[in-house]
Length: 253
Image (cartoon, rainbow, N blue to C red; front, side, top):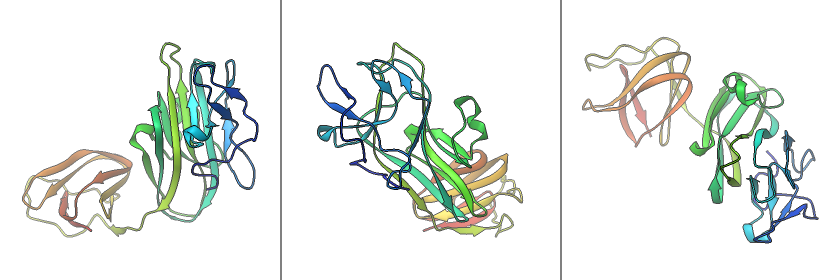
C-alpha cells in the first residue's frame, strides 16, 4: 500500500476551514504513484464530504466527518487501494486517531478493483465493522484485491467524526493443519468437517470454512473458550498453550 500512515499526503491548499475550531481540511492525495487511494461517492454539504486530511494540529490524520459544514449524511462512501497479492493469509487493519466516532462503517477487502455497495457487502471477500480494527483473509492464488473503508452514515441527527492514523497490511505466517488431525479423548465433541482449516499464530487461531458450521475450542482441562459458527475466516484470540479444536490438538505459540 502507499500513503498508509499519518502524515497522509494531501493537497497544499485547504478546501475547508472549520467555522468553530478553525482547523483546516485538505483533500487526500488520490490516484497517484505515491498515493493509490481512490475515493467514491463523495457527499455534498457546504464542503465536499468524504475522507480527507486534517491539519497539523490533528496530526494530518485521515478523517471523515458529518455536520459542522460537512454533509449530514454520507451514504455509501468508499476509500480504497487496489493491490496485487500473492497467495497467503493476510490481515488488514486500521489504527484510529484521537477522535473516534465512526457511525455505520466497515473495513472491506474485495477481489478485483473497487468495493461493493453497502447492500452487497456479503459479496466481499471480507467485511467487518470498523470498530473491530482489523480483518483477516486468505488467498489461494495471486489475486488483485481492493482494501479500504466503506462509510454509510444516513442519520442526520447523529454527528460523527472518524479518524485513522494508520492502515496496515501484513502477511501472517501460520501452520496449516488438516481437519483429520490428532483426535483426543474429550467426549461430546463432534469432529470438524473435512473442509475446516485451523491456523495457529502467535496470539490465537484462525478458523476457516467455506460452508457455515459450528466449531468449539477447549482447553486441555475441558474449559470451553470458544463456541460459534465459522463461515469464511474467523479469528479466535487465545493465549499461548495447547487447545482442542473439536477433536484436534492445536498448539498456539
